[in-house]
Image (cartoon, rainbow, N blue to C red):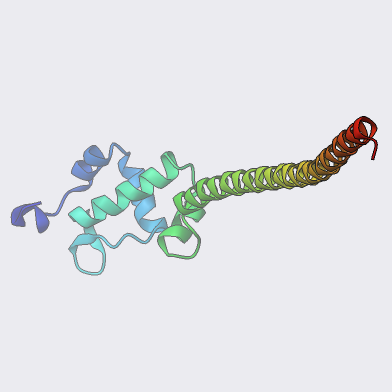
Length: 166
């Protein structure tokens, strides 16, 4: 906006055309939402004149009512900072949905980790059992080997003692 437009005042007809709103509705908006317009005469006499800021304020009012479907009272309260904005609630709702989805995902991941931990512990337990069985088998193998070797030695002694008579 250049300096010339900054100080320019718009007539109700121009404002109506810019906003695509009826002049009576603009007047009602100004009264209900306390839009501070300029006048052609002192003490709010004469004809209204609108600044660029007034038009922007009226555009925001129009958007909140027509697009966001807020009531006039809700729009006024919002513009006065008395209630949370619809977008903030909508955004918060979207964030809450994302947080819920992340919490669910986290819970699922935690459950999966617990399941994997249980599987790991089961595998570890099986591994320990197999190791114990291997130790026992190794001991039995050693005993059998020792026993077999002793028997073989005894057989050799007995064979030689029978052969040589000792």
